[in-house]
Image (cartoon, rainbow, N blue to C red; front, side, top):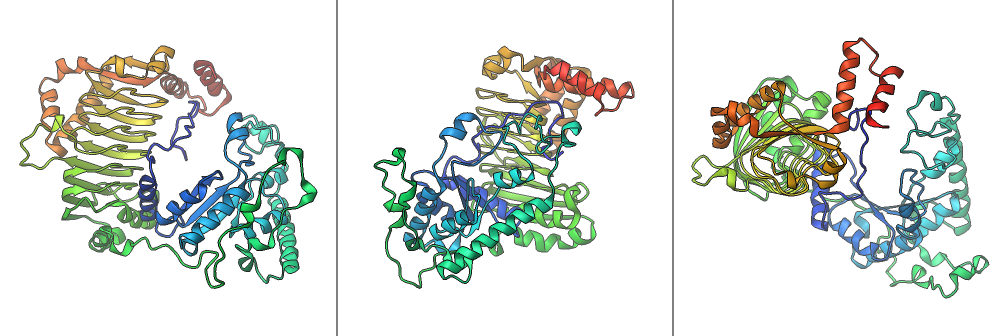
Length: 543
């Protein structure tokens, strides 16, 4: 339920974040998340390596609240062996570089620095604090205290001690208790207190950044460390005593100046008491994440279910900035007459987003770009109607939203696990890479543009539309025409009976097999999570 995926269908965990290719993209994501929940702290995790200090400075300028420097010793059980052995460096090196770089750039007082990566003792905490960390992460150690034996099969559902598994038989073997972790952390705190007393500090805050108290211990010399110079960790520019060595103020995200402030003021009665409101406003491309903070207010008041459909209608004219309608919950409809930048409908959570060209436009909308890249990234619910062509990575990791568009760029439907896509125009290459769920109806699909490996392995199937598919497609086309005035969709509806044969249904094999198995079990009156059904699912998926 949390991942909005289909039980029994395997998921892919890709290392890249396809909405982040530069520090500016990261800054945009931080801005989006802060709008989605102004009360939350936004954390950015960086792997300790050479040059991490420069990246941390960029993260601070991007207005992150916390930066985490993570060491290479971390024990993530599902990581590939190559990552465990060769990714990153010691947190001590990364932390020292981060502290020095932030101080040199006058940024240290506006961001909290965390450290993690096999912290085990109070001594580790003290060293991290002296190198510049204010917060400290314990993960592997806490798992071991609860009974983890480091089998590294967290992703296989076969944990022999019941720590990381959903298997009820294996979960019975779990012997851990919350009190074990509490007891362990109290001992850590006691050891930290003893070290602080020896160093002459009254609190951990006083110790942060005082690396002059550290020295290299000759007793741990090893032949592998021959020629290794650790002096740069303990050196650096001398700063005046009044220069802050830790976070002293919060980041200014300028949320009080956001476009959504006026939307919230106008819609507050509907949010509180229900009803309907329509808001008409112009918009400029400097307005980012429009609708996101409004959606936060709706979610705070009504939870994940939001408001009844169409309760708040926002009609905008102009060009919208990035992340138009990001994380939009149910009950809010955003209609834009103009065009938009990247990330339209990112994380869509039940709302409706409509983008169409100006009504007096003379160009052919189906041949022109209406929105940028990474549209509908990570959407879980809701609908989007886009009259025009969009950029690359359309509906990456969509898991429940429905979208109609008139053309897409490369890598569309990547890692999609649910939902429905209707593509009425040309597609770019590599369609459906890593797609493990959901359905797509594509008009005049060029088979050579579908991900080659998925087709050759049979993971993706290209099928004709059935009667149920045809009715669903007709309904979506009618909605698309009603919302956007699309001439392309209107022409398809005028000759629907003959045009339906030009559509191809893109469907992941395992996803279809699991749905069919569960439907058959439901018809037989079987428990959908019973042993019989799961045995059938494993048989049809080869799992």
